[in-house]
Image 1 (cartoon, helix red, strand yellow):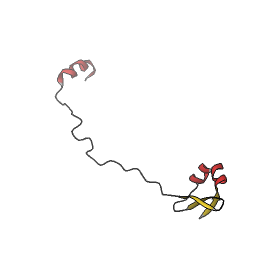
Image 2 (cartoon, one colour):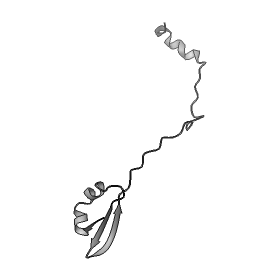
Image 3 (cartoon, one colour):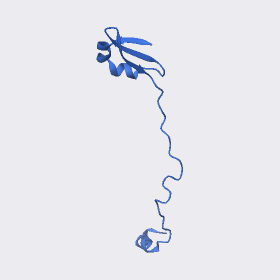
Length: 76
């Protein structure tokens, strides 16, 4: 547990926050009165969506011979 003054916290707050280790506590005081308590947390890994999320949103039309005729000269 680390105790710092309000003035010191204002001067370097981003540095203090980014350097907090998981579970570490930082107490911010003003004239020996506790104002705030910061506790470092472990980053939460983003969850990958499960399979089937877009089920029914995409339709694949396999029998589309009309449009393939436009590309006839490119086909072997």
